[in-house]
Length: 339
Ligand SMILES: Cc1cc2nc3c(=O)[nH]c(=O)nc-3n(C[C@H](O)[C@H](O)[C@H](O)COP(=O)(O)OP(=O)(O)OC[C@H]3O[C@@H](n4cnc5c(N)ncnc54)[C@H](O)[C@@H]3O)c2cc1C
Image (cartoon, rainbow, N blue to C red; front, side, top):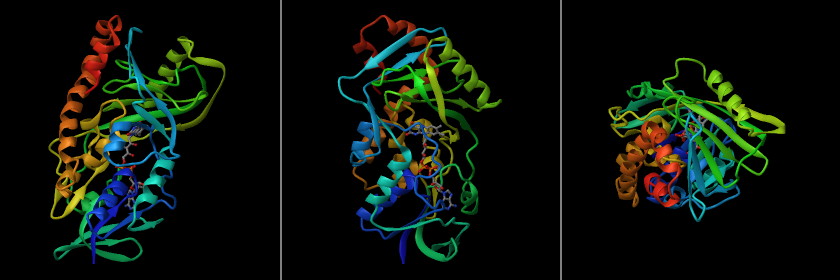
């Protein structure tokens, strides 16, 4: 008998399954894509501390390391915070997911979509071409809502809609991400993330978008052009975008040994500090209820509350803080932004 069946082999599902295996639980992970890490939507900015806490080793998935961030307001005022050491990795998300898959020691089934999930006595039955029975089920299905309703979970109601281009030929400091706040991306922010000397990920997210993110993206690119960020020779290598569910405190994420983790649990905005996203993919309420014994839970709780404070700073106050801090020492700003 399987102890826990995990649906979805994104970071949340794979890390969750790995931790469960370490605790001696027999797990299975089922992924609908034929190849792990296929068709991921991500800017790939991961907080190094977060990865350390999750015991995730460095690997070939790392493309760049950044030490700081520059916040830029609508009127062009900016403020920088720069660490002495690297603070975040810029990663190849597909490679990252495959790295996690290699670290997972349990049974992994790829190329099979779980189409049905139901309670059978005390256990759960999942259909993906064949039927397996497990004592618990974890939905790590990201923004795919098909199964959650079958298991009696409500859908999230608020989203950040994103658009992202990978562009060759943007002038950036390879050490630093640039975050544009204010009307350029209402409710969230826009980013320029250096992948290498030549290539950057340029994108934005809009909270509760009423119109296409494409229009915002066009305006953002125009702005970058007017700021002289485009080199003479430039080229869009890849266009992507996706939807990120927004943290909803009241949304149920666990009942009767069924759990939601990662994006499925809307863990997003709880962890919305620069590059800290992944920490919360794993550490949301779903995971905490699933594995109360996991050593890092206390740390995560602390980080979550700090992150909450920073969320407010980034989303609502950052634009006001930029002019205040732009002329001050970097130490003052890092103190404000380090939560
Ligand atoms: C444009 C953009 C930029 C982003 N940038 C960052 C960033 O810089 N840093 C960061 O940390 N986060 C970022 N994010 C968020 C990050 O990508 C997600 O939070 C993360 O992918 C969530 O991981 P997850 O494992 O919960 O879900 P996912 O990565 O979505 O994985 C879910 C998996 O479940 C599978 N699945 C779904 N339904 C089924 C089924 N019925 N049967 C079998 N398999 C199924 C899917 O195929 C998928 O592989 C970004 C998101 C977007 C859209």
